[in-house]
Amino acid sequence: MDIQGLDYNTQRQALLLPEYGREIQKMVECAIALPTKEERLQCARTIVKQMENKVPQIRENVNYKQTLWDHLYLMSHKQLDIDWPYDVSQAEKIHTKPQPMQLPQTQIRLRHYGRLVQELMEKLKTMPEGPERDELTRLTANQMKRDLMQWGHGSIDDEKVADDMARMTDGAVQLDLNNFRFDRTPLANEPMLPKRNKKKK
Image (cartoon, rainbow, N blue to C red):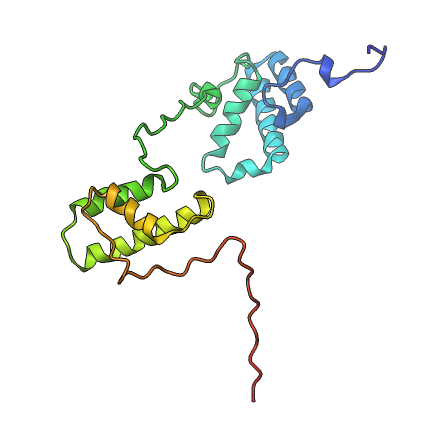
C-alpha cells in the first residue's frame, strides 16, 4: 500500500549495518558530501562517537575503536575521503563467512555409546593389566551403562555392557560380573525422594 506522505522503512534502501540505525547512516552520507577533508574528518569523529553511544556493548571488544572506524568505512561504501586514523584496509573481512567445519569421518561402531567411549576402548586395548587399566575399565563400563539407559530405550543390562566391552576391545577386556560392581544408576522415571531433616534432640 502506497500512501502519499508516509515513508516506510520497507521502501528505503537496506542498511548495511542496521544496529547503528538510519540516522547514523544519514550522518555518514552528509559527511561524504562535505567539501574539505578537514570538515569530513571532524564529522567522521563525531559520527564514531555517536556510533559508540548507539552500541555501547562494542566497548567490550579489545580493539573496539578499530572496529568502529571499520564500520564507518563500510557504511560510507568506501566513498568517505579522509585521512583515516586507523587502517581500514581489512574492514571488509568483517562480512567474510567462516569456512564450514569438517565433520568427523571416523565410523562409530555402536553409536549409542558415542565417540568418547570408542576412544576409551581403543586405549584399553593397548594398556597393560594393572590398577590403572582396572580403574579406566570401571569408569568406562559405568559410562556405557549410563549411555544405555539414556539412548538404549531404557535398557541397562549388565551382561550387554560386558558383552559390548569385550567386542569393542577385541576380547582384551573381560568384565567379571560376579565380582564387578556397577555404580548405582537411577532410572529416568525414578522419583527423587525429598531429604528429611533430622530433628535435633
